[in-house]
Image (cartoon, rainbow, N blue to C red; front, side, top):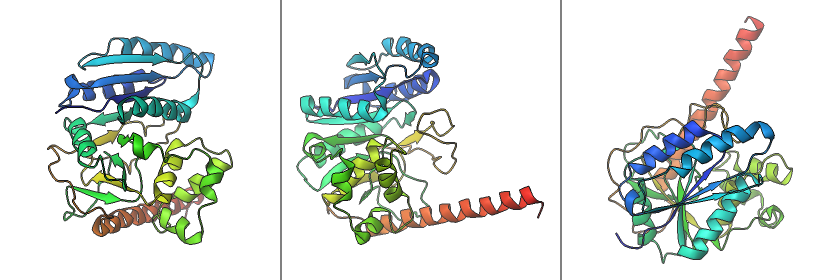
Length: 300
């Protein structure tokens, strides 16, 4: 395959997660033909320095790619600024980019999926984002890939033409929403996307991803997704700056290459309903677990 997208990997202070992420990336088809750009954020505190240094020693030895270029930040600029800066740099130079963080295990077919999708939809303005992660959906009747409104941030890719629509100013984004749009944005209230956007405004989070999804949504854009995940997140173990301990995100990664890409550029209603059903069940399960926990506490 010609003209492969550069791969951006954003790392911080988790050497073991980074080591595993790199090991899985190296096993990808097309890894040896891909340019890898690693962005290492600086330590936030003196306590972080040893782990940051350990990660930096590890990434200096990264091999198995066409080339490896490491950018080490002296200061801590945070994940959001690191990703926004790195993605902007690479799409400006290459016209497209594949993005990983330091806690993502990939299928051997993940880079192939990204590159084929980037080529397939390069000129489709409505397609703005390619995601590699997907929940363990119960539906067995979904197409191998489908279009959806929301953008996942655990392994993704985009083009310069789409990234040009990224709006970092949350006030500009919020001004374009009404009640109907905020409901649609939150998958009819099954996800807290709207709360995340308001939380960013209130300084409660520093999410680039919620602003990117909002930018796509407000442009009427779509995201391509696999029905079986091509990525597994190992960061939901409480080790990350932006992660909590969760088990709902555990997946079995795809064991075969993606061969189907939808020709009709519209949201897949069956996939939408499957995701909505999954999220509704998850909310119900969380509520039941909370009730059981309270009963145990009060001896009910």
